[in-house]
Length: 92
Image (cartoon, rainbow, N blue to C red; front, side):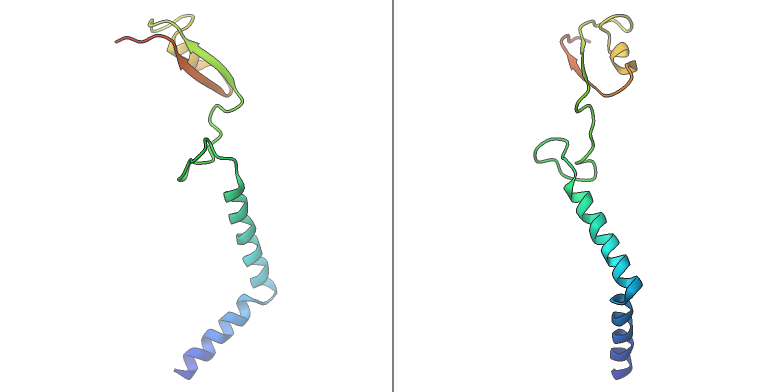
C-alpha cells in the first residue's frame, strides 16, 4: 500500500513539473478556446454547436420548382461561398 502511494506521489510530481505544467496549460487553453467559440444559434449544443454554417453569407431564394435554371434549388446549392437558402416555393 505504501509503495502504491509513493508511486502515485512520483507521478503527481512529474505532472506538476516543467513539461507537465506545459501540457496541462495547453489542454486548459484548448478547452477554453473550444467553449469560447460563437454558437451557431442561441442554445446550440453538441459537437456542431459552433459550426459557422451560412452565417454572414448571401441569402439565396429558391423561387422555382424546376430541377435546373434560375431560382432552382440546384442553382442555390451550386453557389460558392457561405449562403443561406430560403425556399419561397413548395411542391412535390
